[in-house]
Image (cartoon, rainbow, N blue to C red; front, side, top):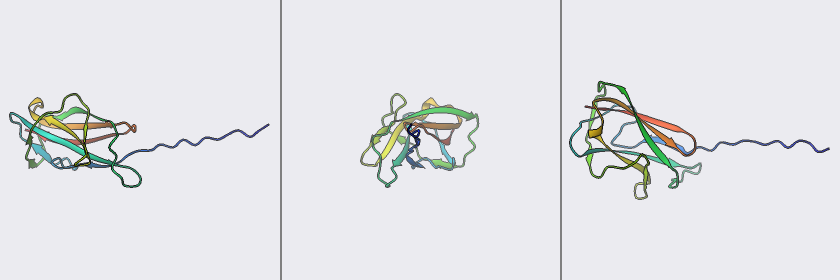
Length: 130
């Protein structure tokens, strides 16, 4: 009779270093609403060898946390084309995943942006809108 085989389960996750400007990772960003204003939500992913990953899938969802905008650092929103759906696009020039969020669709307050990555992890960042 042979010995039973043992299996080791290994979970591999991306190296997520946080969001990129114009959003601050410490939740201190506040954005002013206005017609045509967008917030480019951006982040980078790397592998264990510190190489950028360009083939991941990432989606965004939003949740309102408070009706008041409590943050202090007013950021300058961008103008441009809004993203459709809830999937991030990869920008090879910036080595970043980007989602252009329309500010007009958000009411004033504090919002949590959840990022669901295809490695099974969920990341988030909070911003305020007024």
